[in-house]
Length: 507
Image (cartoon, rainbow, N blue to C red; front, side, top):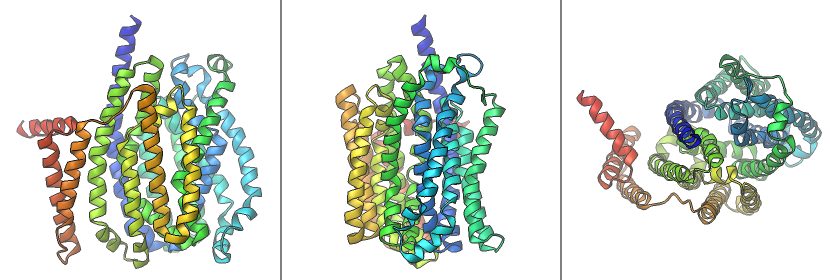
């Protein structure tokens, strides 16, 4: 009986993941369109490179503060919630347990961040320090908003309610950020007012997530002792401590390059690098849509000991990521000149080489699938810290060596090398330890089709008209890539999608 229930529950979860994944993908692509407009058409025209560079400093500093305060409890919540699920009307007081230690941690972090202001400013040139100093303390409030948002997002993901959170973070947040920039440019806000509005957008997201939890009847704020009987706080703190170190290492991989560009070069260079990073971010949105629902599902697989279903999910997610990732990476890379022409600010084009290197690293990160999630939720989750900490140290050294020599391209090269290395190590570890590896002949076929389609589209000459060149290269890439994938049967998912579309058109 228990086996039948487990199978039915697993099938139910997979259906939820598929439905949520489709919604999250749609939301991500709408967010992608808004983010593209922000990055290319709005922010570079409304703000100077140094002002954009300021946001490239404030957000990573706040993110680090938020992660230290949260003490890994967002991931701990995802790992341990299956043990609390349906234990009473309030899941045995899980949500207050999730919030309590991070709120105490934030009080300590806020004091440290405030006291550390002179030390941070010491790393910047006089002009950049003068721009950063009046807005530095905003990072404390921003850190609190990011922390609360991430904790509530983790709780919603554990409940398999991910769509609203995706909407708030992918669409609404971006609209509010660009609205703040427009208000500043039109004179309705001072620049300090813009910075406050920038942080306030994150606060609005956190409040909306709380409101959504209340609307679905899951905003349970009364603590209970039962929570500590199901899983001792000491165990959760131990897991959270490892996750904290792992998350900090991950943040070093993802944002330390921007911070080092700002200190070793300038805030203006950091602004140019941020635009390059945002352009390459279009590649990872489909991956993020999958990962939002993958983590709780894999946690359930570990709890049930269902390695067969985990292996199948690992293979399918890697195949889908490879299919989408190769197409998006080629589409961005082949049309990079067109993208920078839309900016109408020639100084930002200095980040072109950085975009290509960032695309390469993020493509490898997507192709290797959910290896990091598997390691982080496995009984040997401590090894994830070993991988991240070692590579975080490597990326610090690489940035320190490469940025002075190669500038923005050096920062992107360090980031690319870090992502490739960490994913190679994780993929090997998952295969060696658990016998799971996501690669088969279909992956090789997708890569071969991408190489042929990308080469053919790249050899097409410039037409003299940017839009015509975009349509020509994009059309050839799409036609060859789609035909190649279908003819080689590299992706059953793509084949099935075509069948469904054909069936609907014939009705």
